[in-house]
Length: 402
Image (cartoon, rainbow, N blue to C red):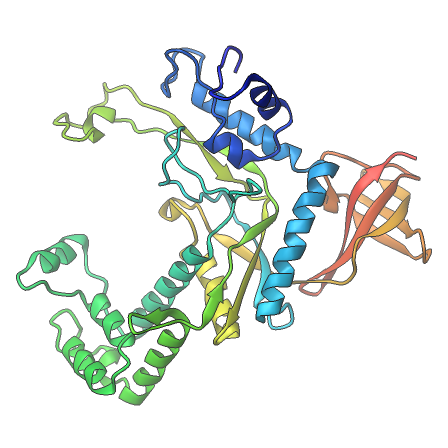
């Protein structure tokens, strides 16, 4: 990005490029520009990709010792907060998850780089807002119950026709939602009866024979967890924050830019110039913490895990983004001092010895941070024990030569 000018004092601009470990600050505030700067790539010059590369380099600085302490402090405070609210490792309402592939958060936000991204304001780390996780879980439960009761999802044209009708007509899914959030028994029974009479409901639908007392119980559960216009929900959905995060550049390429222009009349023809648009994603090597607490927290955590797996979180889920793989864990110890006694790079294994107790533990080189360092014999390090499902993991960090 040679030749770029920043709209901030020179010293701040220099520090922002060389030492800034806040990717969000670079992405949202310190994007470089120069006279005539444009988001459009010309020849070999792609200023948008250059800016994204700088954001990724800043994220890499978070793996250094100075910034890792800051990140670990954030994770410790977050765990104290969620456990104080009632989330627990034991009942799996506090868990980790990693993207199966790539994940995008906040793609629709305003951004100087055209395509948005959601960073934490203070630390510059990617995050999934708790409000988004609540909306995802709520939608998943509604769709699941609709499928169980044979309440159909209408096609886009049918939905549009109902919404344009005078008076406006609700779709079957909207009627089901309306009945679920209604607390008054008589009004809910009326809405359920109207839904059963909707022409889109099949004659053999499970909904017709579904007991009203069981539907009332589901309505109460739905309102207890997610709330309604008559009262707030009793379940807390916390922001999901990363333990480890990688950022990667992906590209989407509209092949028919003239066709997609607002008010454009051109057909999607093959002679139009494709327009590659680089954008930021979270890589599959990332690990995030998730937590819920409050009303029905074990059931809600199970819903959330299912929702993360299907349909997935974030943007472009229909294209394979945003599917997550949950993992349960328990931290068995705090970080402790150790000396590495054996290293086998071929088998990706090693043995460390606790400085105080003399206990020796085997570890995998895949569990050493940062990943690009292979420690040697007699190196000092820090380690801690984690339990992931039924497997014990020895995490190693800050490995240094003697």
